[in-house]
Image (cartoon, rainbow, N blue to C red; front, top):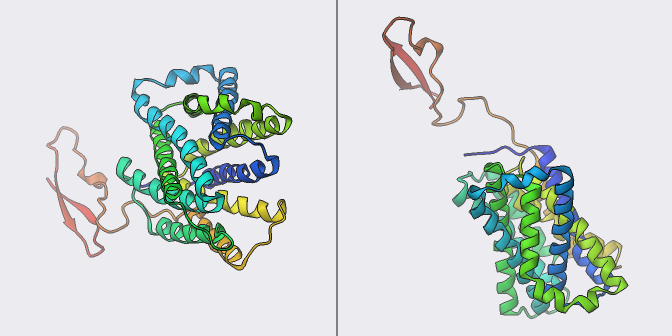
Length: 336
C-alpha cells in the first residue's frame, strides 16, 4: 500500500509545524510562572473548546461520524495527546528545552513511520528514509545546547515517550480519516478529553494563568497553536502519508531556532547553521512529490488482462494464462 504526497497537504502540515514552533519562544517571552503541565493542559483544553464551537457552528453533524468504529483510534489519539503534553513538558523541565526538543522530535518521524508501517501497511520509500535521516541529523544539530550539559536520564526517557506519542497520534488520526470521521470534530474531542485528563494541574496553575501575561499566552497557545494548527495538520494528513507528516513536523524546531535568533536575540552557532541547512534539505527531499509511474510498470506488478480476455457474448469464458515477459512484468495470453 502506497500513498503519494500532495503539494497542498505538504504545505498544510508545514503550516502546522510553523505554528507549533512558536510555542517555546512565546512561553519564554511571556515568562509566566505556571507549571509546564498546567500550561500544556490549558493549551489543549482551550484549543478544544474553540475548535468544538467552530464545528458546532459550521458543521454540527460532523460529530455523528464518530461512530463505534472510530472509537479505538479516537481513544488512542486522545491518550497520545494527553501523554505527549505531560511527557514533553516534564522532559523540558528535567533536561532543558533544547535537549527535550531534539529527543522528542528526533524520535517523532521514526515512530510515525514505524507505526504507519505496522498499522496501515504503508511502504516506507527510499526518499522518505533519506530525507528523514537528514532532517533528524539536522534537528540534533539545531537543538545542540551551548556548553556542557548533563542529560537527565528520566528527562530523556520522557522525551522518547513524547516522540512515540506523536507517532501514535499521527497514525491514529490517519486511521480516523480512513474510517470517514469528521476530523475537526475528532480533533476537538481529543483535545477536550486530553485537557480534562490534565485538568488537576491546570486548576492548580490558574492563579499564574489568570494574569495578563498568562491570559495572553494561553490565548495564543490555545486557539492558534492548538485549534488552528491541529486543524491544518489533520487536513493536510488527508493528502500525505503519516510518515511524511511526521518528518515535516521537524519544521517546528527549525522555526523555534529561527525565532530564538530573530526575536530572542540569540546568536546562531556553527552547528545550528549547519543543522538548519541539513534540516531544510531533508524537509525538501520529503516534500517533493514523487513521479507517478505508469500503470502496470515496475518489477513484479500484475497488469490487468487485455480486453480480449473478457468473456464473449453467449460463449464460454476464456481461459487466462499468465506469462512473464523480459521486463519482469506479467502480461496475459488467452486461448478459447
